Length: 225
View 1 (cartoon, helix red, strand yellow):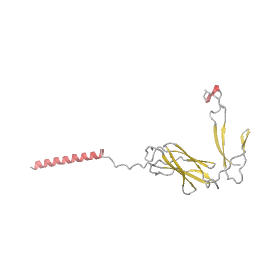
View 2: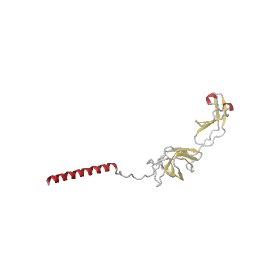
View 3: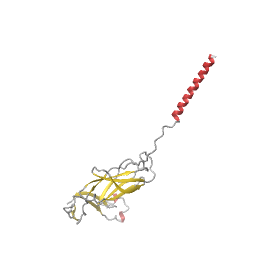
View 4: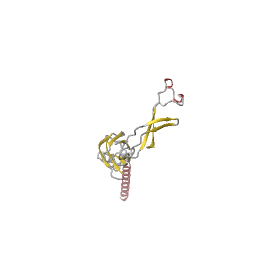
């Protein structure tokens, strides 16, 4: 009897060990891990916002993201908020209803209110915030700075005189009441089209003085006279 009992205990232990090994293998290979939290669908913040002021208008430009902060492609238009702040003040919202498609080249132009379009020049910084379907965001974009205050008057009396070493420009000075300004000059080289016999030749065979096919535009900054 004892031999039979010992043999039975032996097979019970074998069965338990086999069951434990099977359970461990099942746990390591087939059991799913902890469930991931649902995506908040927060669009990636912008980092290429730019701003240009012309007269009393400020034009913003940026590129919309393709993915959210969970690296998932965004579906549908993305709501956009714009705000601006002076110095270290709070960012004041710009009233506008904006939304753009993912990866779109977005633009927005604001006409400055009277209090920002007058007075002495002072820094004014714009920010853009992208919203999720639940009106949440991952933060503000980079800041794009312009100058608030009275815009300089138009340049009048512009003329050019050619000299051996270049061109001399003349224009009327600003009035004493106008704010100090920097003049930006735009230069565009206008050239005739290449002659018919050289149009099909590469540039290396047209000579060193061959005119470019497209106008060349350059900008430089000089002090106001």
